[in-house]
Length: 139
Image 1 (spheres, rainbow, N blue to C red):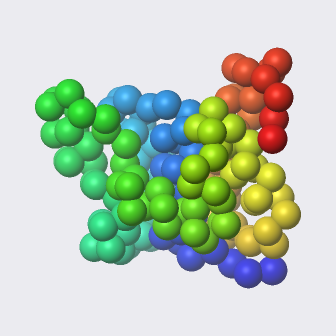
Image 2: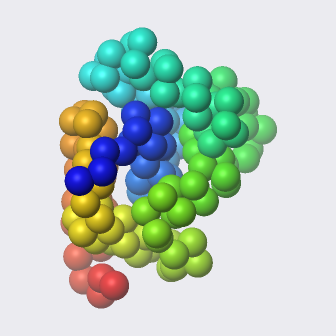
Protein backbone atom coordinates (compact mmCIF):
# COMPACT_ATOMS: atom_id res chain seq x y z
CA UNK A 1 0.00 0.00 0.00
CA UNK A 2 1.54 3.28 -1.13
CA UNK A 3 1.44 6.16 1.35
CA UNK A 4 0.27 9.52 0.16
CA UNK A 5 2.59 12.42 0.96
CA UNK A 6 1.38 14.98 3.52
CA UNK A 7 0.99 17.61 0.79
CA UNK A 8 -1.11 15.25 -1.35
CA UNK A 9 -3.40 14.41 1.54
CA UNK A 10 -3.94 18.08 2.41
CA UNK A 11 -4.55 18.91 -1.25
CA UNK A 12 -7.14 16.12 -1.53
CA UNK A 13 -8.97 17.62 1.47
CA UNK A 14 -9.19 20.99 -0.30
CA UNK A 15 -10.19 19.20 -3.51
CA UNK A 16 -13.09 17.51 -1.68
CA UNK A 17 -14.05 20.82 -0.10
CA UNK A 18 -14.16 22.48 -3.52
CA UNK A 19 -16.59 19.92 -4.91
CA UNK A 20 -18.73 20.19 -1.81
CA UNK A 21 -18.92 23.95 -2.35
CA UNK A 22 -17.13 26.29 0.02
CA UNK A 23 -16.91 29.98 0.76
CA UNK A 24 -14.02 31.79 2.41
CA UNK A 25 -15.30 31.02 5.90
CA UNK A 26 -15.40 27.29 5.10
CA UNK A 27 -11.85 27.40 3.69
CA UNK A 28 -10.63 29.30 6.74
CA UNK A 29 -12.25 26.79 9.12
CA UNK A 30 -10.69 23.83 7.32
CA UNK A 31 -7.31 25.57 7.32
CA UNK A 32 -7.52 26.12 11.09
CA UNK A 33 -8.89 22.62 11.75
CA UNK A 34 -6.15 20.85 9.81
CA UNK A 35 -3.44 23.02 11.35
CA UNK A 36 -4.65 22.17 14.83
CA UNK A 37 -5.27 18.46 14.22
CA UNK A 38 -2.17 17.68 12.16
CA UNK A 39 0.12 19.98 14.07
CA UNK A 40 1.09 23.50 13.06
CA UNK A 41 4.61 22.66 11.88
CA UNK A 42 3.68 19.62 9.82
CA UNK A 43 0.67 21.37 8.28
CA UNK A 44 2.65 24.55 7.56
CA UNK A 45 5.36 22.50 5.82
CA UNK A 46 2.80 20.78 3.59
CA UNK A 47 1.08 24.09 2.81
CA UNK A 48 4.40 25.77 2.00
CA UNK A 49 5.30 22.98 -0.40
CA UNK A 50 1.87 23.16 -2.07
CA UNK A 51 2.05 26.93 -2.40
CA UNK A 52 5.61 26.84 -3.79
CA UNK A 53 4.44 24.34 -6.41
CA UNK A 54 1.45 26.52 -7.35
CA UNK A 55 -1.07 23.92 -6.21
CA UNK A 56 -2.85 26.13 -3.65
CA UNK A 57 -3.47 29.83 -3.30
CA UNK A 58 -2.86 30.24 0.43
CA UNK A 59 -5.35 31.71 2.89
CA UNK A 60 -4.43 35.35 2.16
CA UNK A 61 -5.01 34.96 -1.56
CA UNK A 62 -8.27 33.11 -0.93
CA UNK A 63 -9.46 36.04 1.19
CA UNK A 64 -8.40 38.57 -1.46
CA UNK A 65 -10.04 36.61 -4.27
CA UNK A 66 -13.32 36.43 -2.40
CA UNK A 67 -13.25 40.19 -1.74
CA UNK A 68 -12.85 40.68 -5.50
CA UNK A 69 -15.92 38.52 -6.11
CA UNK A 70 -13.97 35.58 -7.57
CA UNK A 71 -14.30 31.94 -6.65
CA UNK A 72 -12.20 31.36 -3.57
CA UNK A 73 -11.15 27.72 -3.30
CA UNK A 74 -7.81 26.89 -1.69
CA UNK A 75 -6.69 24.61 -4.53
CA UNK A 76 -5.59 26.20 -7.80
CA UNK A 77 -6.55 24.77 -11.19
CA UNK A 78 -3.14 23.11 -11.23
CA UNK A 79 -3.86 21.65 -7.78
CA UNK A 80 -7.15 20.20 -8.96
CA UNK A 81 -5.47 18.67 -12.02
CA UNK A 82 -2.70 17.30 -9.77
CA UNK A 83 -5.26 15.41 -7.66
CA UNK A 84 -6.97 14.13 -10.81
CA UNK A 85 -3.59 12.87 -12.02
CA UNK A 86 -2.46 11.28 -8.73
CA UNK A 87 -5.78 9.51 -8.29
CA UNK A 88 -6.46 8.82 -11.99
CA UNK A 89 -9.73 10.73 -11.87
CA UNK A 90 -11.35 12.02 -15.03
CA UNK A 91 -11.02 15.79 -15.02
CA UNK A 92 -13.94 16.08 -17.44
CA UNK A 93 -16.33 14.11 -15.23
CA UNK A 94 -19.62 15.69 -14.25
CA UNK A 95 -18.91 17.94 -11.26
CA UNK A 96 -21.88 16.69 -9.23
CA UNK A 97 -20.34 13.22 -9.27
CA UNK A 98 -16.71 14.14 -8.68
CA UNK A 99 -16.89 13.21 -4.99
CA UNK A 100 -18.39 9.84 -5.95
CA UNK A 101 -15.41 9.22 -8.23
CA UNK A 102 -13.06 10.36 -5.48
CA UNK A 103 -14.62 7.97 -2.96
CA UNK A 104 -14.55 5.02 -5.36
CA UNK A 105 -10.94 5.69 -6.27
CA UNK A 106 -9.76 6.09 -2.67
CA UNK A 107 -11.42 2.81 -1.72
CA UNK A 108 -9.81 0.87 -4.58
CA UNK A 109 -6.46 2.62 -5.11
CA UNK A 110 -4.37 1.07 -2.32
CA UNK A 111 -3.23 4.59 -1.37
CA UNK A 112 -2.78 5.03 2.35
CA UNK A 113 -3.53 8.15 4.39
CA UNK A 114 -1.09 8.90 7.20
CA UNK A 115 -2.94 12.00 8.39
CA UNK A 116 -6.07 10.68 10.08
CA UNK A 117 -7.76 14.13 10.45
CA UNK A 118 -7.46 14.62 6.68
CA UNK A 119 -8.87 11.18 5.91
CA UNK A 120 -11.74 11.75 8.34
CA UNK A 121 -12.56 15.13 6.78
CA UNK A 122 -12.53 13.76 3.22
CA UNK A 123 -14.82 10.82 3.96
CA UNK A 124 -17.13 12.97 6.11
CA UNK A 125 -17.40 15.45 3.23
CA UNK A 126 -18.17 12.66 0.77
CA UNK A 127 -20.88 11.27 3.07
CA UNK A 128 -22.46 14.69 3.64
CA UNK A 129 -22.59 15.28 -0.10
CA UNK A 130 -24.18 11.87 -0.66
CA UNK A 131 -26.88 12.68 1.91
CA UNK A 132 -27.66 15.97 0.18
CA UNK A 133 -28.25 14.19 -3.14
CA UNK A 134 -29.49 10.73 -2.13
CA UNK A 135 -31.73 10.21 -5.15
CA UNK A 136 -29.18 10.95 -7.84
CA UNK A 137 -27.54 8.08 -9.63
CA UNK A 138 -23.95 7.61 -8.60
CA UNK A 139 -21.45 6.68 -11.26
